[in-house]
Structures are given as C-alpha cells and as structure tokens.
Image 1 (cartoon, rainbow, N blue to C red):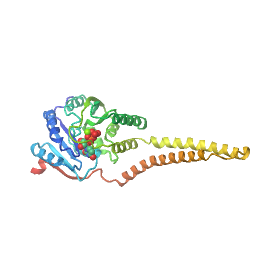
Image 2 (image 1 turned 180 degrees about the horizontal axis):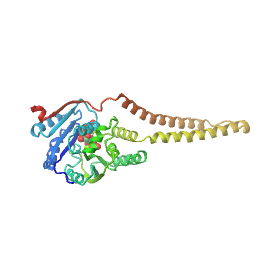
Image 3 (image 1 turned 120 degrees about the vertical axis):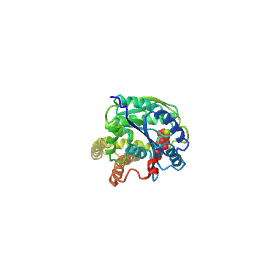
Image 4 (image 1 turned 90 degrees about the vertical axis):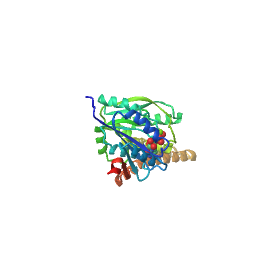
Length: 315
Ligand code: UDP
Ligand code: MG
C-alpha cells in the first residue's frame, strides 16, 4: 500500500543556529524537493540571527513555517511544539546542526512506505563525540533499561520519522516532563531503525552540558519508572531489619556481658553512613515530588510569540 500522495513534515528545533540554517535548508531541499513537504522551524528563543534567517527563507519558500517561542523553553519543548503543529502524514524530526544527515530521510520514507509507523536513526559511528560522553550515554541506557518498563533503542536521538497516527497519540499526552524518545517508544506500533554515522556539528557549540544531560536523564527515568522508589523502600526494609537485630544484640551485650563501651569511630561512621543514605533517599523522593509539583501547576509546555508563514503574511 504505497502512499503516493502524502505530505511530509520536517520539524527542526532551533536554538542559536545561525551558522547552520542556510546549509541545512539547502541539504534538506536536495533530499525532499521530490516530496510534497512542509518545514517547521521552531525558534526556541535564539539570541542570534536564527529568526531573521528563517524569515528570509520563508520569503523564498512558502512551504516553510516558523514557530517563534517567547523565550528558550528547551529542546524537548521545541520538538513537541513542532510535532504538535505539524500537518503531515509523516513527520521527520531533525536537528539544525547537520549532525543528522538529511539524505537519510529517503530511507526513512521507504521504511514508512513499507508499513513502519516509527523509523528512528541509530548512530553508528559517533565521530563528533568524546569518549566520556559515549560512556555516560551507555551508562544512561543501562540504567534506563533496568528502571523503565520500556526499552529505548540504544544510540538514538530525536532524528526519526513518525506516522501521523503516532503524532495524533502524541497530541493526547498532557504531561509536562517530556522525554520525546521515551514517549515515542512508549506509544508502541511497528518501529524500526536505520543506522547512520553521526557527523560533527557543522557550526556552533552543543547546547547540552553535563548538567543538562543529567537533568534529562533524571527526567526520563522518573517519568517512565517508579522503580527507584520501590528500590529505596526495599532498601529501607532491609536496613531497619538489620538495625533491629543490632539493637537486640547490643541490649543483650549491655545487660549480660557488661562490655565497656568504647568505639567512638564506629559510632560516627555509622551515623555518617546512615545520614548519607537518608539524604540520598530524600533526594530521590524529591525528584518525584518536584515533578508532581510541575504537573499540578499545569502550566503550558511553551509559549508561542508568533507563527510566521508566507500565507499569513500575504493574507
Ligand atoms: N535546541 C533547542 N533548544 C535548546 C537546546 C537545543 O531547540 O534549548 C536544538 C538545537 O538548536 C539543535 C537540537 O536542539 O537543533 C540539538 O541540540 P544540540 O546539537 O545542542 O544537542 P546535541 O546534538 O549536542 O545532543
Ligand atoms: Mg547537535
């Protein structure tokens, strides 16, 4: 059941990408000009000339749209906004920095035509990345596999094609803590991956530092799993049983054996050890509470200042 007449939406989150946009557009067009397409740039509060460059592109190509955020809301919010506003039968999410090669879109569309609803790109060789980043990323996937009830495919980013059916489901999700890759995995359907070699950023710097990556990891684990809470409960049960036993033993020793109590060192070590564990446990619980706080406030994921497109300008 080959779909001949279809609209392909390309969603590009943009944050300070002035050096990449023209080249991205040129490369995209080379690949998608044979399709019926729309390109949705989401300007996530860029402070450079990204917005003006996209506005200039709109004048040349009426199939481009720009969603302009009121400030920087983050990569996940920008991706969500683009996907939610897309009209295509298939939607491709691609980074603006040319780390995701546009020519892969052909292969994605082919797989989609074969009946897959999600086609994600797997990073084969990660040329542009340091060893430490690769290590932390593989550690993250290991923890995620253990903790969450979903299996997120390894070495994938947001670069993927999703069917309009998945987009419709995605629109129904109301949660604020979004981990796009995880959610797309969670919806199910027929999914497949294709491998590519990830290149270095064409221009500019990565916007993810380790602190941001850590927040992302915490978001993704806590939004897909309550296992950390279960683990600490189990931990608490084991520790209090041990403590109870020790208390009994110490009482017996005190009453019947009359040992002189020395050992300040062991006492202080025990106190430090258990207070450390308690703070760690409170920390994990707070991660969940803070997310509940955010969900309860129910603020929008992002605020759109304006949507620009050729039609709106003309009409
Ligand atoms: N991005 C965004 N908002 C942000 C940070 C990043 O829209 O707050 C965009 C950025 O412009 C790029 C994509 O998200 O198109 C991926 O960002 P980046 O290349 O910095 O991440 P990395 O490839 O290093 O994981
Ligand atoms: Mg990048």
